[in-house]
Length: 209
Length: 70
Image 1 (cartoon, chains in turn blue, brown):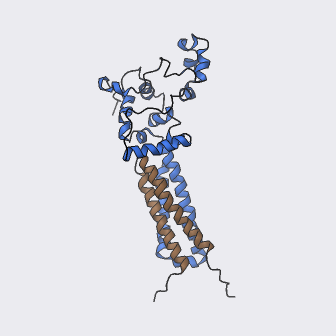
Image 2 (cartoon, rainbow over the protein chains, first blue to last red; image 1 turned 90 degrees about the vertical axis):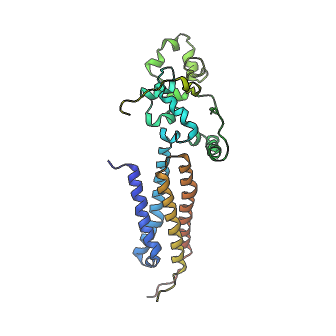
């Protein structure tokens, strides 16, 4: 099946050919056909290619490979392969509880350009820190992890709603749903990326890789 | 003898060159998997394409409207 990237590449290359024709022979715009050609190749096609490009880049920026392409994120990528079920992100990644190709974005939906204006500005700050400044170590979330990220999958699930640990205290579930009782900070699911423990960890090797 | 390009033709040529440059930037950034690629695409490619389109549109509105000879 032809992918979106292939279609976009074809649109870009076709646009370049049409525009090159106009650049070499701008006099053809004197005719009616030439004017239509100029309109299509200098306005319609570039706008289409630009729009498709934005969409493609946004989709691509949701991929795990994209997030892990920065050196500072390497350890966080490794933590997804720790062979220990107490590591929450590793379990989600290895047991396909989140799509592997979009693992980061699934649990960090309000990060940089997907968040508000502040988050977008932070994203630019990250680029500055990556190339010119110094990324802070260890990396920390700007805000405490919001239960919303867990609940967009777990809410309504029987394992979540009927879990003994969740129902022992009758107030607990409602407090979790209101983000008053943090899933990752209340001492229950608190082993997250824990990159400080990677040196002692063993790693899962995916079959066939 | 080659005739001199008109003002509109010159503008179309400039617009075309800018658009080709912008599209080439887009092409390169699509093959590059890194956050910087998105910034290059948006800030450099986007600016070149926007400028190219703007010059083309300017050439349309500023075109001399000579009456046609019947």
